[in-house]
Length: 372
Ligand SMILES: Cc1ncc(COP(=O)(O)O)c(C=O)c1O
Ligand SMILES: [Zn+2]
Image 1 (cartoon, protein in one colour):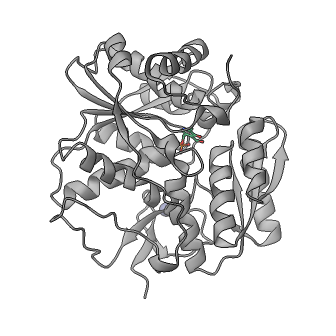
Image 2 (image 1 turned 30 degrees about the vertical axis):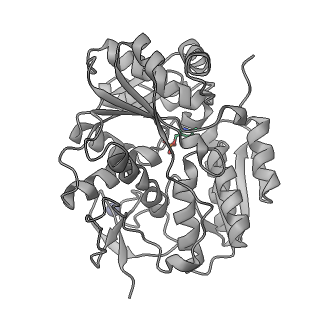
Image 3 (image 1 turned 60 degrees about the vertical axis):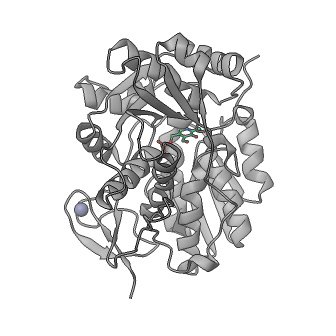
């Protein structure tokens, strides 16, 4: 018997854990993993272990993802009026972005289920990650990408051997094409947006933060959010740690989006926003006009007293340069957007000078167009 089921966060129905269910068959919401057996966490050695949906961990796939360093960003922090600003260098994951945390678990579960061929759609980073882990697992991957995705990301997806399907139009057209293809071909849709297993993988972010900050969690964590896989996974991880008695509070988790694609910010702040109004942004990783887990993200924001802010294109580009020149960190624009948002959140008075603040630097700069 499996140690997990899939539960719908909207209507509460459960169904057996498999690789073929995209969304709840009753209400259409994306599903979450729920653990039936109590997987022990180890509190004794201060190495807390995240529960995992993988059945057979020894035969799962890994490239050594996670355990990324946290560094103090003194100069940038001073300029933004905060003394305790830290960056967690997620771009040091095996394919250069945080996505590897989720992909490792999603592909390992796929292996548990004997999957040999799968479909994914991505603006680049998730595609590169899935392509790499699929190669290592001996699984054939079809990656649907925007035709205008950064060339470096497209090359990275190709080199690991995935079949790349470029699609013209906005990001949502790419998802639509991937869904048609997986249905027509009878293939598994291993979508980092919908997969309940992906966010289970990103949970490790929270476990590492708890260890790196020695239980005294940051007051604020600021995420660049498109579909919310890191945001949701981090929240799940902090909830597990809290439930196991390892931590007291959950940090205030904040979302940053680009002004050009800001569905979550609009919904959170009660502004009208039409997905048709979405326009191109340098922060391509968060250019999701209709996030499939929007309800879940908004619920989390309210629970943790987070906020959601939108940032302008020039401030994203300026922040990419500031990070590089002031801290020696070359982040891709999507990741720089989180720091631009941090500046905005600080201006709103939500963050105080002595608060401990963490920002995941989600993707490496060479993956995108290089600004100079
Ligand atoms: C570098 C980078 N940061 C952040 C994100 C946002 O992740 P999510 O869509 O899961 O919120 C992405 C997604 O592609 C990304 O590539
Ligand atoms: Zn449902």
